[in-house]
Image (cartoon, rainbow, N blue to C red; front, side):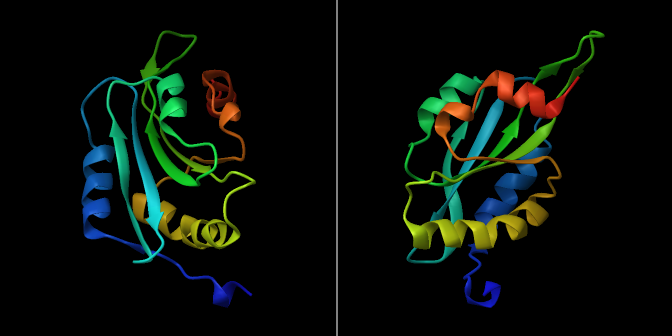
Length: 140
């Protein structure tokens, strides 16, 4: 069955943006939101959020459309250290179009590999995307 799933091409623009995003020097929360262009079968940039919050990120997503989110999170640890983990969040709402869900699912691992991200999380409901949820995934 997996042979029938179309894996979308990751454009050069997305590759370059991912590289810049990975090595950014800012010390705030930022998100790169990516989407699938169904006609071109490509992964493209939907939006870039700088100096944002998890709440603002949640507000920028539509509850019925899948998205890939690359998140640079400013995490303050109990011992006073600050780290900036990069997270890959795959948002796939239950009520989104089946064909679109398959395109996103079929392209997820490829994009994750290209972005070189090991922290990968999946959410089905937009309400799940909270600071508490993220911290529970990241640990201290």
